[in-house]
Length: 510
Ligand code: SRM
Ligand code: SF4
Image (cartoon, rainbow, N blue to C red; front, side, top):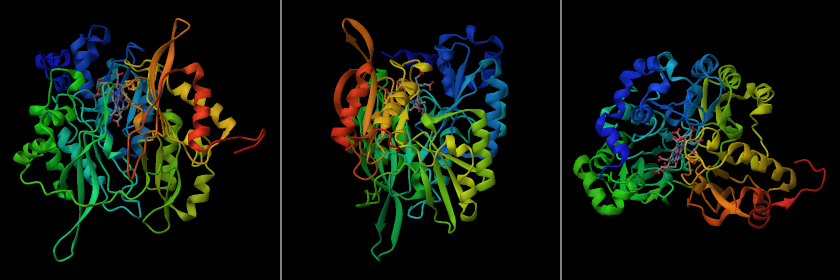
């Protein structure tokens, strides 16, 4: 029996609402029926039950690349159309614009189109924002600059941003990651397809650079699973076609009965990886076996701070954006800094922060003295530096607990009390869906409820031990249903006992 979302899609394809926006803008949010409220996510418009009438608009920014001009224009959309004038950097290197009205959707979409951006197919049963290395083209040690590939994958998925019915009815959401650096900077292992750099050598010793391919990674309320090797090596020119073949196999054969077991990994469970590979080969043609020389050599960095680029005399500087929250004035300022000191480009990271590339040595001191860097620091305190959080109760329809404000309050308190030897990646999610990527945190938190003295209170499951980069592995459950009231004490003990934190001397500064 088809699940309710499958029925909605059978009645009318999600992408159909693309051509009906003027109608929805005219009739207003109160009159839009339930099916269309879901379908509007196919064009990036998310109805928010918490703020009826004020929607969230999720963009697509492959690889997290944004120009200064786009930052100015997006800030202007917030100023003109949003009541709360806020954007959030997401855990997929993307932006969500908050507080916008469907009544203004035609004008907003036209503005997006004019600035070369799209929000198409950014939600529901589509391929989400393609994540990639945020330091592509800058990193002195990268094997492949993946910028062009992130755009080519997106163009294939969305027919150049206008929408592609070929991939608008997948069994479920689908995530793609591609990196050419040696640190797995976009977390291949937690994506449905992950491309990681690898080398092969021909018989005459010539080096071939390409990617090994992982498949089936997912987090959901039911399951958290790292992707499996497909045993395939592909050269850069073959990436787009391999994505297409995998997607067609998933689209045509993926399970659709239950929303809870319809991600790609469930098809791989049903078939086994060997049959899945054979089915992909039947569409794609012969797949070359994976390379033994996979090039994830380092612990992943967060890219915060000053880093030398491959271009002599230039650096990229990573700025920490607390919990990914941006206001229009800050967006304008980021755009201006990128224009004045860099090359007019801002890059977003999966840690919900930003990178300004291409800063010439002679401009670096002046850049570092800019007032915005007091807010978006290149050298934040260690616990704050590793803090990531999903949207949580403030706006999310599925949230069980409030996240961002709570996460910040706990970290500030801990930061005042403890000296930690290194940044600790603390990843918060307001429910078990793990949008805040809790399973890759040193410490991961998943919102839930528990009972204290007969009263239901906010709580978290605590995960520990996620590792990223080389030898990535998912975090494991450490404590269940810890009431948020007790969280400070529990985290403090955990940081001391497992992460080498020590009490600060009274009055000590960091
Ligand atoms: Fe997510 C649903 C926010 C990354 C797993 N996610 C939602 C919704 C749409 C629920 C809703 O309608 O309210 C949330 C919107 C809240 C809002 O107003 O912002 C939401 N997810 C987010 C974001 C914004 C979290 C953040 O603060 O950064 C991230 C947006 C990424 C983007 O730009 O596209 C976000 N979500 C993720 C990730 C992480 C990732 O992609 O690396 C995951 C886990 C990885 C995965 O998908 O395998 C994730 N979100 C989910 C799930 C569970 C999926 C499943 O298979 O069951 C849901 C619930 C669902 O789809 O039914 C969900
Ligand atoms: Fe919402 Fe849960 Fe995702 Fe957080 S993890 S954004 S609360 S669905």
